[in-house]
Length: 381
View 1: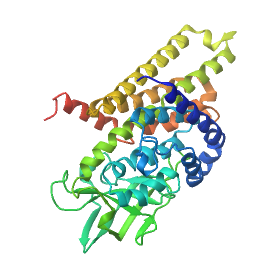
View 2: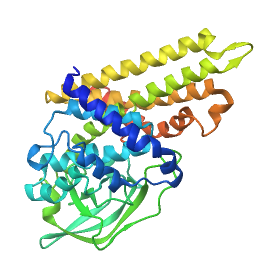
View 3: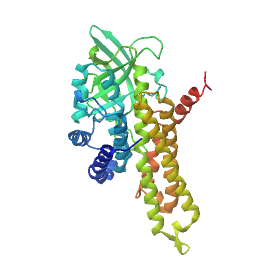
View 4: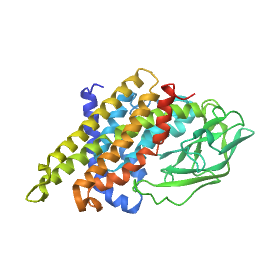
């Protein structure tokens, strides 16, 4: 993927924003388990950063996904996976299907304010009985006149406590589980919508995550995105962008973690010499830098194919699988080289150790990625 001057300028703009508007507050937000999404997203909207790949007609910049990938990668300079993930929900998880398949009326009501940063969006897919297995979801919508009556509950919902609306996958018939689902926009202020307590997570603590309950929630059928029954297909398409965003968003975090560790090992001494003078440490950190760069190339290749309209399910799954495993490997190694300090809360390695663990779970587990890859390799019937 060629980085032209426009992409470099975008990268620098996002990098500066991340280092100025997120990184200085990350520790405070992590301790409180909350970041001010409306305030932060409004600042991003004012800089046209929330609609980079969305159509100009609805307030976006109308750029191809390579610019979105540059945006995701540059956000890594925030050194906080929680806030970055929450931003990714807004740009690459809760709004792609709305932009691609929603009616103009629906876009004006929900997409435009999301791009402006005036509304916080959330994607509500996972349930306690069906996270990675999207076909097993139980939340249902029954028609009543021109409305849907929705009942069920969602789990692990990012941005839940601050969301203005949820892009929700629901069953709209009793048909085959792959053709009975629809994506429906549910405003959070709708009667019958309730948000559970924030989940006390191991990592990504700056991002609020909570269950969402729907008790006879009534929304108009015009809040459905696209054709009824095609929600599963739409969500599979959304997963491609979600997995590319997740993979790209941690590249800088891994690079930074390695760089910080090198700095620390240059300063720390043991047995009369610097830790960095140990060839085993030099080689291991060099190897990890190489792995990050190889992952970057894979992500860039997937992005190029995506822009050309190709199916990148396999490459996106490979990138997601590799990124989830590599971030754990990088963090674990760097924690080790920090020694006792690595077992404290006072360095980026320990933070990445906690935050990085989710990357092999959220957005599709490693096992799901492997199953997808195996299917495309014709090992699964």
